[in-house]
Image (spheres, rainbow, N blue to C red):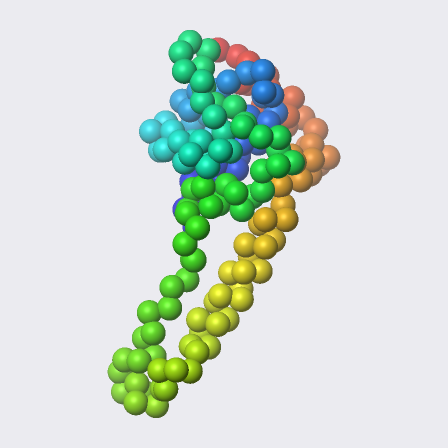
Length: 156
């Protein structure tokens, strides 16, 4: 998984703390974490295409959450950034090499089966967790984070 997913989740949390009344530019979001602005904008555009954020043009424009944090799952963000393709794709390498004659092509690849089950469990867990869940956990453990975040984004 590329770091764009992490950037996307953190950016969405920042937008949640800033609130729906304020848009934040991609450059400002990138600056917050010292990230490349162009790459951050690419992640935000992917989130926008998925309906997670929306952008407003012009002075004072930028990005805002398109839905409430409780309506955005971590899996939504992962799928927006990474796509919905499976993380593991069996290439049937067991059909190659000296052991290929021992493998019946109709037998399911056990490696593929294990990887698919693991991915389904991973996706299900991410689909159960929302931005609101993460936001609440951060606010409970570090109540200064949302205040500091709002203050920073309100500055110049």
